[in-house]
Structures are given as C-alpha cells and as structure tokens.
Length: 223
Image (cartoon, rainbow, N blue to C red; front, top):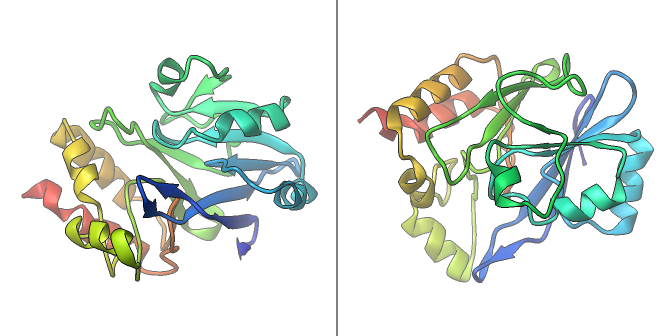
C-alpha cells in the first residue's frame, strides 16, 4: 500500500499470546533504485514479488530487539541484502548473521534517505527510530501503538494498558524503561525532528499530528 512518494506499508496478520496485534512491514525507496525493508514479516510470495518489483532489496532492518521472528526468513530470501540490527539483537539471536548495528549514524546503504535515532534506556527494546525527511514521516516499532478499535481479549489488554482509542505507549513499554533520563533525552531529540506522519509496526498509521501524538504519549516520562 503506497503511503507517500518512495514509501510503502504492508499489513500482515500477527498474533501473540492470544492478542490480535495487526503487524506492518514498511518499504523505503533508496537513491540507487533499490529498497530497504523495515521490520520484515512473514509475507506471502506474491507480496515479496510486489516488493521486489519496486526495486532490488538492498537492506533488511530489524529496528528493535523484539521484532526479529521473521528476519531469518527474509535474510534467506535476500542473501545479498545488508542486514542491520538494533543494538543487542545480534547477541540475542546468535543464530542469525548481521552486517552491522543500527544507531545514530546512518548506514551507507540508506544514508541520505533515512535518518536513524537510537532510543536507549530500554534494554528490552533498544529501538532505533527512522525519519524519512522527504515525506516528513517517522518510522517507529513499539515506541507508539495506535489501535482505534479492537475486540475481545485484545481490546481488554489495550484498555488496561491505556493504549485503546488513541496513539499511546503501553504499560509494558513503560515498565521497560530502566533509565528514564536517557529515554526522555532521546524522545526529546525525536520530537525536535520535522515529521507529521508516524508509521507503526502494529495496526494503524498516524497520518497527521504524529509529533503531537508522540509528545502526549510520552509525557509521563517527565512526571
């Protein structure tokens, strides 16, 4: 599904612990005509074929330590792609091979297209956010959830987590923060970036007002 010029998102079914947490994989056009795949998922062959029609897959990005279950499948499908992991993921998944670690410095494969920013202070995640300046879009994974509606057990979980009906940070994410000062400082840097849209790894995109949504959702860190 096209999001903006040079940016696409793919919805995929995703369940964990009985929760229906709609997943997303994002695709970013690179200057050489290739593409970077952000948060690879287990996609049907036909969907991967559509992605490769956009351009050869140059990079596979695993932006935090929780989103890696399908990375091995994607790496096997695209052995020539540069495989980049969030800090600490290579140690967690010693069965996978990575070519580099994501951080605040742009890897040459996506330099000039994506601006990375590491959000430390959460050892469980070590998430790296990406700004796509050309479309004023921020790509996040678990730093923000947006579930306008949900049903059953998923609805109960999101409601108890304070993450139902509006962009929010879940109770699990709040408990994951072990160094509030470092996490707050990184989020302040994110909020200094020029973006409006926020692409997420679960459920619904925040099409506009994304900066305000992230600011409101993370305000608890200043309390």
